[in-house]
Image (spheres, rainbow, N blue to C red):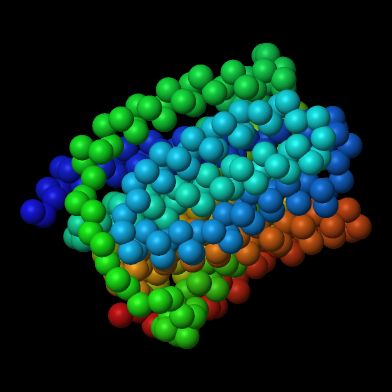
Length: 380
């Protein structure tokens, strides 16, 4: 029996909550980075390694887990993933060494790798006619979590201190139970499939063009979300303003994703992706070199264009390979963003040598390359 629209939307709402929880806890590192750099005497290169650690394990596992999900649904992964993220990131304030922080990032990355392909495949199940809007709703959960987490964690640690972060386990596990317990009632019937083994050569050429464009956006968005608080504090602002800058960057992306998904259903994925990449770069540059009193508005506009089309890229990739939603989501949500995460190490190293602002100015221009690639993308 085909699931009703009500069931599909209810399932997506539960997954929205899981996405908010997983990515919210996973976003604690960036706003705390100025404090951790000072406390543990970290270089910007070491800070880049920490940002890469979580993304790297996520990158290595997501495509394979996505292929596994395509063979038979494994909904328990959407609960296990946030559980690992919540447990790991709750102890970030107790880490007294670089190695301890590194291990925390690895476990959190494992949780993200479990959650994303399984959840994206469940959102795609049912072939809803408004797939762009549906994926936008799910994706905005993660973006919203990443937007509100910086303010929450900075306010919390300001009030109770860094060493009090393990108490965040209590609300984290409560939210986990709130979406995990009713989720089984709206899951689709498990269907075992036997898709052909994944071969890189089986991917259509237009998928590679799309994937490379997504990578360019991932490089810039990951770099700014990771070093944003450091940039703001280097310009004389407090850690709280640094956290507010991260929120200002990510929150418009969460709101804009609803419009981007709806527009892509009407006008096509290619047009929305091209416009978003084209307009993101100038606002990144204005943020870095404009007046200090315009920092927050400029980074908000940059986030609107850089992040709002994330679900559009996922749906476009799924349309390139019908029936392989888990694998495609792993390649786009995991591997592409993982490549962006890997660039944090050279970005941090170069910033130690030449300064953070000059290096990030070069990073700001990368989305122009993605916009050019979208001109080559052939949309069916």
